Image: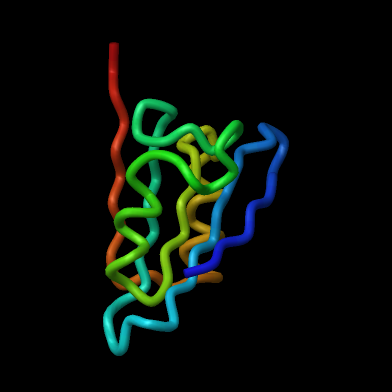
Length: 91
C-alpha cells in the first residue's frame, strides 16, 4: 500500500490518497473525517483509522472536513467514489 499527501484549498485541508494494488476488485472510498479519526498533519497518512480502511480497498481518499461543500463536491466529481464515509465528532 502506498499513499500521497497534499494540502488543498484555502483552509489548507489535508488530503491523503491511498492505493492498494494487492486488493483485486473492490470500490473507491472517500473518507471525510475530523482530527479525532486520524491526525493527518503529524502522521502524514500513517496514523489513525484511514490506513486500516485502506488495507481493504484498492483506493481510499481521506480528507479533513474543513473543506467547504463545493470543494467536497469537486473532489467527488474528480474521484467518483463508490462509497462515501463521513465521520465528525460534535462537542
